[in-house]
Length: 86
Image (tube, rainbow, N blue to C red; front, side, top):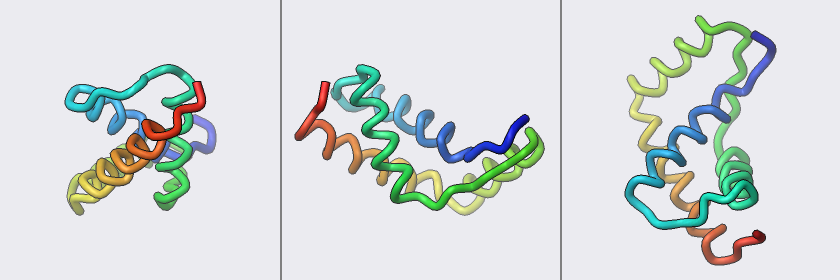
C-alpha cells in the first residue's frame, strides 16, 4: 500500500451512506466537489499499510468521530446542492 489519506475512503463511504437517505446529484463532478469540501474540513489521517487503515477505522468508531464526519459530509452535500457545477 502506498501513502494514503484514509479519510478519502471514509468520506466516500459516508457519502454513499447519506445517498440512501437524501436526494442529491451523484454525478462524478458533484461527488468530487462534495468530497473535496468535506476533506478540507477534516484532519487527514495518512496510512501506509492495511493494518494502519484498520487502526484508524477502529479509532474513529470508538470515538464516535464517524458521526462528526457524516455531519461534515452532509454540510458539503448542502453546499453543492445549492450550486452544482455539473
